[in-house]
Image (cartoon, rainbow, N blue to C red):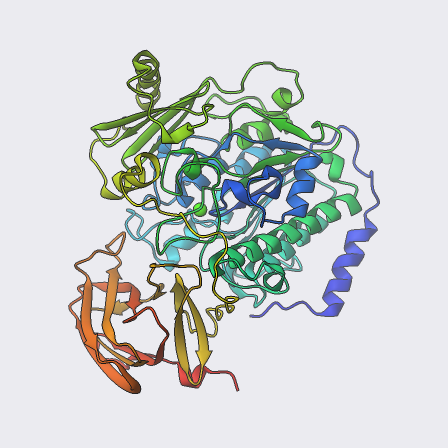
Length: 622
Ligand SMILES: [Ca+2]
């Protein structure tokens, strides 16, 4: 089902929007709460932070300028699933086991903000990325049926439009008409932020007369990177392609936020609506994973408990109640959103919530910092921040103490200089950890976590993410959309459909980073036979790597390599992939940094059915 709006439908929405006169609500009515949660959105990519010259976020800047910019705003995890579990429940997600991306679903017994606000008369909607369904590794196992059982509708949301990209599971269509036999799978061809904004506006229009909670989780600037127009053409052409794409995607989101703010004003709701905007975790920077966003000047990236992984754009606006233009310096947490919403709804405080109501602190009615300490535990890392100190435990052996207010920040370990500070922080961390079921500070080292700290903190390994701000190469071509490339996504490379083939080109400014193409979302029974028809003037090694449903990540063992002769002619290369189980994700590493053309990829699995074929000649637009 396609949901491209007709002009008539748009007119209907506008008529609805303007028929509610401002000020219909009584002054006592409960305030609306809107939580906008972006994805892999680094600290630098809020222009008001003034740390990067290229980012433009006029609407978010206006939101901050008319409200509060929290410059030490933290999320509860450096990764999507646990961060979302934390913000939507207001509880440290370790309390209910959703500690990392492998640990969904959000248990139905946990109370979301939507469930908490319902007794106070609130209506709630979820839009965009949810990511709290069962995972392939969870006891509930990911299946269509089980995924439905854990959609937002099962967690207190009266409406939902649940999906990151162009296909989403919905309870209503974008005009707000309830769907029979919900959830229904809907498709909207517009750039993901555009339909997500449309769903949010539809919900606001229809619920202007009752208190509402809107959780709008824009899937931006998370990969797959896209080049949405008209925003992409406005980005500086000399920047690396991923940076341009991230800037364009953030601009699309920013424009959507402007439409939402304008609609609140048109409906007379802006003085009765608290809007939070928070990034779910820092930007990933490591080779092959960079999404074009930046954490400058913070140390580290997604997957780290240094500030680069967990300190994100964090702003709030509530005209007439929150001071305008305030820059709030004390550390706050994404967990504070739920406690704030519960307090505004007039509900009794709940000691199971880990956050605090931020309003009296921001208004200056309460003095001192909102939190004596903030805590994290993720993979092989655990951390505590109190005052200007942060202690990080890395595996069972390694430990860092950082003075966050010093110029060196998280690049200088102060453990040897301040042992008593570290000991005090470690006692605090152990006391918090003891409240978690089960308590366990890092028990085993994790190679990726060690590499992160060696690269970003100690700089004993090449620092990831040190990318040229401006590439000397010519303007980067816009990478073809996943629709054109039939679901194949370029990583650190640019894709185009050209002369009946998928052309993979090195990315300007990528330096020695070697790109590859990847296709998630497969379901092929191993072992597999693969044939790749390609043309490579320089030749070299072609590699095909796979990941099965049981594997959390790619491993060096699950890859097959073969030599490709340098030739301007088409050649077909065959592979046998000794994969066992269900192959869900592939990566194809082309033979050289220069352009490689692929005419066709075909995969035959062990079921004996027809092969899955991606023929880029057939897909080429006329
Ligand atoms: Ca994320």
